Image 1: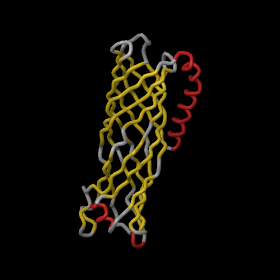
Image 2: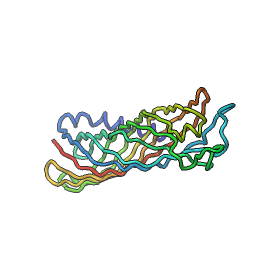
Image 3: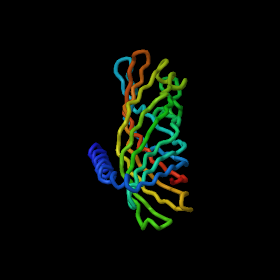
Image 4: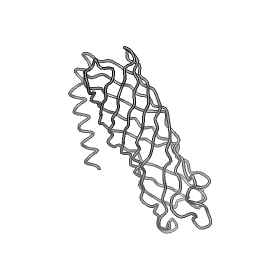
Length: 233
């Protein structure tokens, strides 16, 4: 996966550097707004700890899907290439206990044990198919994503499962991203867009319960359907 991410970053950087001169000469600007429909194909190592933080085998977590506002700035680099910078309103994401139904006498599986918000801009270079005069233009893109987690909060159910008041930390992530989609021009300045994106987001989680440390690593693998409208100027 590190190789895939490296190739994506190198490809995006090379395309951006090679096409920026064209953008300066004949660039158009587009602002897009719509909705992100985010699905997580998350997988995580079982939560682990030692000594007082020892955890029974099979204690894991899952991440609930979420919807949020999509916002993007798109720069026309040439007749065939665009640079897209996409982000959204940081959504609140719920993490649910997965594994045993209880930890001791405390309910665990299916309980919302923590919540987090994330700011996750994605940088893409998109190649557009068909002639520029065509109203309908499919496209495909590659680039990278940066994710910063904040407002990490353990719920009362999570505190009970971990054995007391617990703080949560998630490391930032940089990973490859890819997208496919299509645009339909309604008139000179307005267009509609639909796309599907897949992103690598990986984070190390540390839970601290009064000095008792428990850890896991989560591969979120978010996939996002986007429906949006764009205005060019």
